[in-house]
Amino acid sequence: MTDWTPPPPGDTREQLPDAILTLIETAPYTSTACETAGLLAEAAAVHTDQADELGAWADRMHQRCRINHKYTGRLCGCSCH
Ligand SMILES: [Zn+2]
Ligand SMILES: [Zn+2]
Image (cartoon, rainbow, N blue to C red; front, side):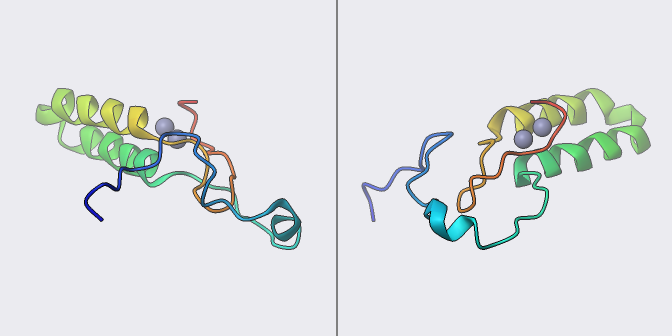
């Protein structure tokens, strides 16, 4: 386990085979990174005194998005892409 590294963005090694993907219905997808960025943006609107810091974290989370869903390959629907 020590030599395990996170898969790079766009990696499809854990994605289901196309023949299986055609049989399932995938819901619109927003990555956890972009979802969290959205929460940070909401918090920035409430905690205006910390808006700069929260905004910086939100940007960072958007940049960490891996865009394609690990298992279904569905693309993140966040407006930042
Ligand atoms: Zn995003
Ligand atoms: Zn995203």
